[in-house]
Length: 344
Image 1: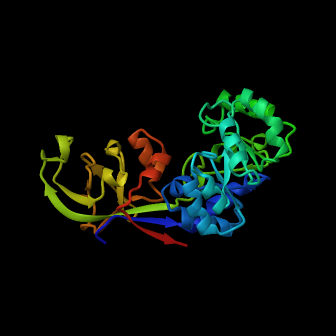
Image 2: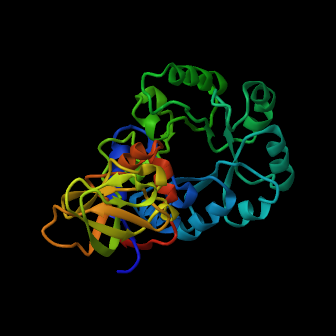
Image 3: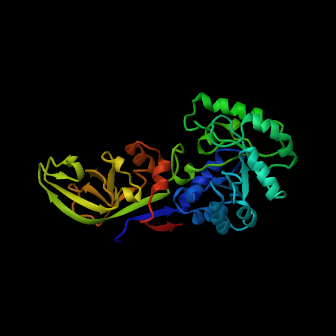
């Protein structure tokens, strides 16, 4: 193995979906945008469809095309960005459902695809995407006469269960949708844990499927193995890497492995994380560079051939915390240079 390897456990992914589905009494969909959070939209979507997922969510219409190829006809594929200029053919030819975000999108959809199903995305306070209350009040009679397939909104602070914004958005979403005949959805992964009043007709987890917080009991879905290029002795007082940021306090053995920030292992991660030989942690030392990471393997009995940086002991959220970011960014950054493998 000369390149770093990313292994995606589809059985763990399916298990995470089943566990999230069991936490509610309503239907559970799946968010597979951004190439299924970097893990491959086609194998991930096919696995989830086999588990019984009937509602998939993507960011843009082009992503929906890949998902439709993987899962075939039938299940709903909803497009968060709605009906954008130039999307008409993709929406029609691949049976994708736009989530209408603005009055202009509603007009565009009615003119271009008057008989094609659509959903409504409402802004309940996040101020990112969706119809604002005033626009929705004006559009609602026309839209509801055409039976939207879903009505949904997105929570801004669901990963903080006690944040007052959650109750505020719940109240706004209810005010905007009470009385509708369409199925409603407010909860992604975080909202699933906020309790039944947030569940409405279906939940649509994303990051929790892939092993990320706030789903604490999630099974790890991703492992990353890094091949060791070289192991060198380093004397007391010698430094390793750019900026002399790490200096040996004992005679050491330093392994240089083939991966770096060009592969999504962010330079900001720095110290505080390990690479593993089996279950033995070995500290990452010095700065992460573009293609190389240096690891202190002094305490191993022999030189390793590879080291694992993501596993059940050290998750995407651990790497994210060390980098001052979130697990989503680590997952979606894992680069194209990794050789990829799927295990059932």
